[in-house]
Image 1: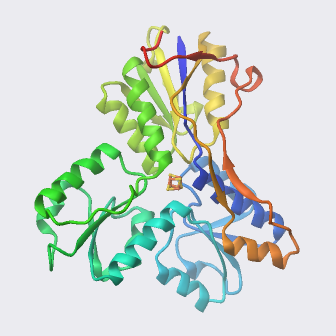
Image 2: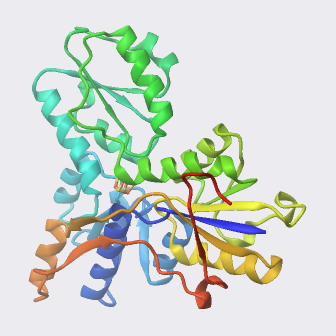
Image 3: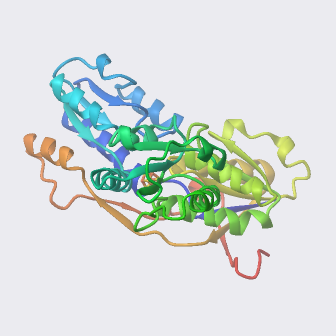
Length: 349
Ligand code: SF4
C-alpha cells in the first residue's frame, strides 16, 4: 500500500490565525470565561480541544454575559452582531480571516456605488451570512445556475458578483458563466474571491487524485472547503471519503491492501490527525509514505487589531508577532515512516 501525502493540505493562514487568537486570549485571561461566537473554525477536534480548555461556544450573543470577552470566528460576522456586542458591553476580538474581510469590503464598496450584489455561495454558511449582512437590501445569494431565474434585478447594468472564499472553483465557474450569459454587463470583482488555500488544495486534488485508487480527506462535515475537496475527488473519478480522524477509517475502502491512497486535509483540519492516519497505515498495513508537493505556500497575516489592543492592555508586546503558515515537517516518529518524494508531472510511479 502507498500513501500519497499531498502538499499543500490542512491549515491555511486564516485558520492558523483564528486558532492563535483563541490561544492568545486564553493566555491573557487565565481562569476567566472566554466565549467564541460560532465554531472558531469548522473542525470538531479543534472545537472539542478548546471546550476542554474552558472555552464556551455560543450561537447567540444573548448567551454571553455583559462585560465578557467574545471572539468572532474565522468565517466573519454581519455588522449587526458587532453592534449587538457593543450594546452588551462585550469586548469583541475579531478573528475573521483577512481574506473574508476583503470580500466584506467589496460588498460595502459596491453597495455604496449602487450595485446589486449577487453573492455566489451557500446561503446558510456563516461566511455568506456575514458578507450578506454588509448590504442585506442589495445582496442576493446564488447557490446554483437554477437560482438565476428567481433573482429580482432592478438594473442589469448595475450588477456585480462576489463569491464565498471556499467554493469549488469549478462550481463557481459554472455559476459565473451562467450569470454572464443572463446579465452580460455584470461586473466581476477585481481579483478572485475564492482564496489561495481553497484554490491550491483543490488543484492538488485535481492533479493527484486521478492517479490514486482512493482519496481520504481529513476534515469535518460542516467544513465547506473539506466537502469541496471530496466532491472534486469524486468528479475526477476517484472514490473519495471525508473523515474526522483515524477512528472513521473503514478497511472495506482498501480491500486488496495494495492500493495507492491519496491523503489530504481541509483548511481547518489539524496535522496531528493526518499523522495519526499515516501511522496507522504504516504500522497496520505496512504502507510506505510518498510526498506529492504540488505547490508551496508562504502566507503571512498580522494579528487582528482587536487582539493587539487586548495584548496592550495586558502589557504584552505584540510588535513582532505575525501568523505564518508552513508545510509540516514529517518525522518517522510522528508519521510512522520517512516519506519518499514523488514527481507528479510525469505521473506517479
Ligand atoms: S480557507 Fe481561505 S478564506 Fe477561509 S480562513 Fe482559510 S485562508 Fe481564510
